[in-house]
Image (cartoon, rainbow, N blue to C red; front, side, top):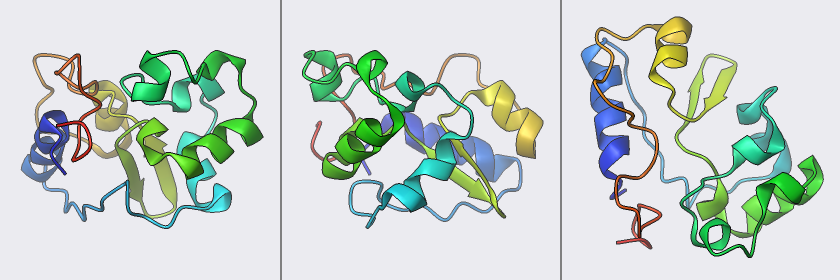
Length: 130
């Protein structure tokens, strides 16, 4: 809720004919087992929301973490989780690289600009960041 780019991401998916069942990432009852599959083979550092306050101010340094430590931190502070988290059937994905999403499930159009990162540099996006 409250993320400008997430609204754009959902619109792209819906325009392509996909049904979006949106959930509030911050209020989901995550466990390490339910969260981990979204990251697939991504490097641990790429699991993180780079605009999360703890990442921006250096309290969390994603490149210094192993998988277990990263998941523990994300469970304690869901703002750290890279978004969006998407699932189609049993396949899952973190982040919104439009070309990857298009190759995975298809998009009617690709955005003319990057729409994954929060467009507000001082905000992690969402109800706590506005």
